[in-house]
Length: 167
Length: 105
Image (tube, chains in turn red, cyan):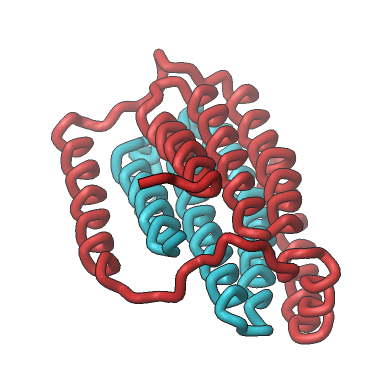
């Protein structure tokens, strides 16, 4: 059974993203967790490119790896967190969490294993290019777009108000 | 290539995020696991977008716009959430979520 190039790339990216996602959860040092999450985000951006979502891949890298993870890294380094002072749950609570998550995984996999859906074709399409997405965004989704700008403004004001030192 | 591969990958990433939220006590790590879950959903939505675009639907690009809005909301959420975590750390010198139960008194 020969595997196409697409499937090989998918497999490699998936393995890297799953391993680094597990690294986020299992690593003792918060800085290692952040670095693992950045690797996960880059592999997800690779998946976006494989799925013809070039614009989203670029936005994903800029927003997540460029802005959000830098913010996380700043906060962690500001607080000087490290593995020694890392709070640990009791062992049975950890096992309970792992078992619950695993049971959830099994339930979802069993529910969707037999679902019949159209297949992904190997060719590319134009849907993820910035001109098509821009037309869709500014024709059908203008109001949500403007509302999201208000959301950003309120989030910015909220962050400043919360982060301000009270006298 | 069946779209099930992407469904299974997204489910696995989402469940790893759920496990992280349940297993860790550091508020920042829990927050990062929530980001991981959001990204799993985004990946699934992009896969479905490609699936319907290949099946000939002209409005399949809407799913990618939804992913765009999820990223917007996630960015706003991170700004406020990290501000709250920094404030809690300033007041109690810890990011342990177990100290948050003081909020109830």
